[in-house]
Structures are given as C-alpha cells and as structure tokens.
Length: 586
Image 1 (cartoon, rainbow, N blue to C red):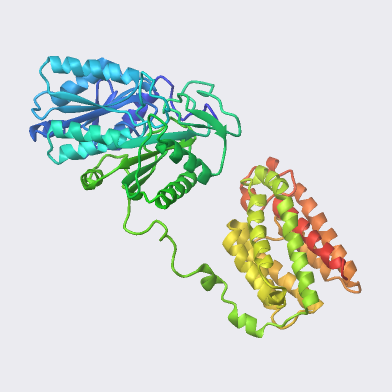
Image 2 (cartoon, rainbow, N blue to C red):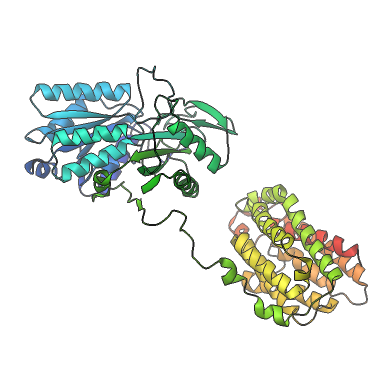
C-alpha cells in the first residue's frame, strides 16, 4: 500500500477530478463551486415533465456518483469531500435547480449512512417546505451485518448504482415520481451486496493507510469507507472466497441476508473496490457465475468492472439483484452516462464458453510423425523419461530462486512460468505408457506442444522452439551424434527467433557453451556430458558481469544487472539434473 497519488494537492483533488470529468464529457457541467455535476440539458428535461434524478455522497468512490450523470441515468450528482457527505446547502441548491418549474418532481437517491441521510434529508425537507415535489429513496442493501440490532441499519453499497439506473431509465420512459419511488424501493429490498478487502486504501494527503490487514488476511463485509467488516480470515483461493461471500449473503440465520430460491432470475455485479486487477475481476466473475449455475440461479445480466470504489482499496464486492422482465427492461435502457458499462446478457449456458474443437485436436496432431519416426528400446525410453522428469523437478524446486533473480531485471516470474510448464510436462509424461515414449521425435514434439500451451510468455515460445527443432533431428536417427545435432538445432532456433547471441545475458549464455562442450573430439560420452553441465554452469555464472542486450532485462538500468540471469540459471539447473540421470547409466 502506497500513499503516493497523482494529484495536485489533497485539498483540490475532488474539484480537480470533477473538472476533468466534465472536460471530457461535453454533455455535463458543474454548479455550486464545482461540487455538483449536472446535465447541461436539465431545463429540457424539466420542459418535458420528466422526473429528475439526483444522487451523490462522499467522493472517493469514483466513478460513482458523478460518472453516472447522463441521459438515461442521473440528472445530477452532489459530491462531498473524500468519504464525507456533501453539505445540505449544496444538496438543497441542486434540488432547487432540478425541481423548480418541474411538475414531474425530483427523486433523490441516498446511501444509508448517517451523514448522507441527515444532510440529504434536511435539504429535501427544505425543498418540500417551498412546495417542491421531491421524494427520497434510501439505498441499503448491505448483506454483511448479521444482527438486526444495528440502529444505523444496512449500509448502501455498490447496489445503489442499480437503483440509480432503474430510476433514470424509468424517468426517461416517462414514468411518474410515485411509480419510480415504488419500484426503486422494491429494487432495494430485492438485492444484496457483500464485499471483501485484501488491504486498506490510503486517503489523499495521508501517509498512513485507513486500516491495517495482515499479509495473509482478508476482511469480509467491510463498508465502502473502510468501516469494519464482519470478520477477518486467512486469504484463500478465489473459488473458496466467492463461495464464502455467497453463503454469507444468503444465510437465512443472518438478519440482512438475501433469500434466493432455485430458478430465481438475477443480475450480478462484480465490482472493483479500486485496486483490483481485471485479471482478478474476471476470475471472480467466473467463480460467481459458475456458482450461481450450480445452485440453479439464473443469471440474466452480469456486470464486471469498476463501479463504486473505495479509492485504491484492493478488493471486490458482489451484488445480486432479483429481476423480472420489467427490471431487465430498465437495466438495459440506453444511457450515455460515461461510467455505465453494458452487461453480459445470458443466451446460452454459462459453461458454453469454449470452442467445440479440443486443443489436442488442433495442436497435438502427430499421426504423421508417429508413422515415420524411429523408435528406441524400452530401456532407453525409460532413461529419456527419467532425464526429462528430473530436469522438470529441478526447475520446480528452483522456482523461488529463479523468481528472485528475475525481480531485479524482469517481472519476477521466471520461476513461476517455468514451473507451470514443467508441471504440465510431468503430468503428460506420467499419463503415458512407457511404450508411447519410445519415439524421441514424437516425444519431444509433444513436449513442445505442452510447453506452448502451458508455459506461456517468451520462455514458453523459446522452449517450444527448442524442443520442436530438436524433434526434427530425431525423426530418422537417435544416435549420440543425432542427439548432439538435435541439441544444436534447438539452440539455433532460439538464436534465430530470439535474435540473441552469447554475451547478451540470456539463456544462450548457458546453452551455447554446453553445446560447444558436447562437440569436443576424442572424449568419452561420460566426459562430454560432464563437460557440458560444467560449461553451462560457468556460462550462467558469467552473466552476472554482463550487460543485457536482449530480452526484458535489456530495458532495465545496468546497475540493476548485477546477478545471474534467471534464464541462464534455469538452463544450468535442468541440464545438470538431466545429465546426472544419463551419467547414472552411461
């Protein structure tokens, strides 16, 4: 967690952000000293006798609430300071602007926090005292609280934006204020939200986070201002975490639960609390949609993105809203509000997400190679199998070390990437009968495919090239000379497509010396193999004194290039492990 922000000052952060929003959205303007975002066509709305919709609250939840101002959604949003309700005077002036001369009236959507209820409520009562038609709907869909003995009641969370959306659409559709209020209140009791935080947020101008969490802790059920949740627990895999959130949300023993029956139609919102990557959001989407399907809950709409945040807090919230055809109509109603995201719509099973052709049919079609490739004995096949498995195991064991070496000059994932590929290779080998591994050309070709599919990144491509090129040399000959040629072809392919050479601080600084050692004349096979691993180790160690000329490390400052290259280190590791197996039988 960092306190660094891209702002001018903590005092002007909110006003600057609002000004930026309006500058890039020509249909919006500001009032009340820049703390209210309002549609430029507000007078036209009133002339058409459409209900005007106001929402708002503390800032720090962007894109809410100002980002939802626009046709089909809000007429205006009132913005307070970070995590602080806006003053009632500003709210009052906004209501006057939207409700004066508008017989259709104004709806004000308020989040269920004491400051919001009091300030918005005061402004509404003042407006009503002038004879203006004005009503309030309180968004309070929090499902975290387990006790009914809370005077403040359920908090308003991400689900409030669905109330805003339905209200705005109904206004655009010409519905009266009374109907909009009734429907929005029904929406409120038909949905629930629960969130989980992986860490705190940090307020602009503050050097300390809002709260602290242990390195292995997460907090369930917290509010959008960092208010305490229902419990802290150990971090867990996404599937387990989402199930725990769902179970808490629907637990009938909880006073704030959302009852869901089999066959229920729902809309689901997967919301980023501010500091969560889209990679994580999409994993959460997969897990919650899959879980709903297993429970026979029919997800008709799914929204996944950044909707209501808590500054830069890492975490997510889940909102589930029971829907019918009328609500779906208003959720789908067109809007030009800049922050609204179009949903996924259900028209097929959630499990129908992969192409009908299996990847094995596309990638691993080795029938022709199987026909022409020469075989080795079962004993030799066992030696090759053991050598490859040993090489894979050595990289799995070196995962942390390789990641550590990669942190200075890369993205810190070399060990993780190689481990993924090695585990997949190991799984493939262990699933095959030994007799199926008697053709080295086929064996290496399949390893190439496994690597390409499972290792990923540049490492996956380079090792895929290595094994594919090596396989081509073993189709008609599996002698010692052909094995050296296969190794050389693999190295040549990496040199060609990786556009690097010895001395560039890459894996080639271990591979090329190893290859040269294998080519030495007048030495026994055992001597060549031993020299090969020693040469690879010397080559890998020498990279600590090299300047990177290829790969991601070449973009980093030379002063950070002081340790062994992780790619070369990996080669030295797996080559020694494989050769040790071979030397045991030579």
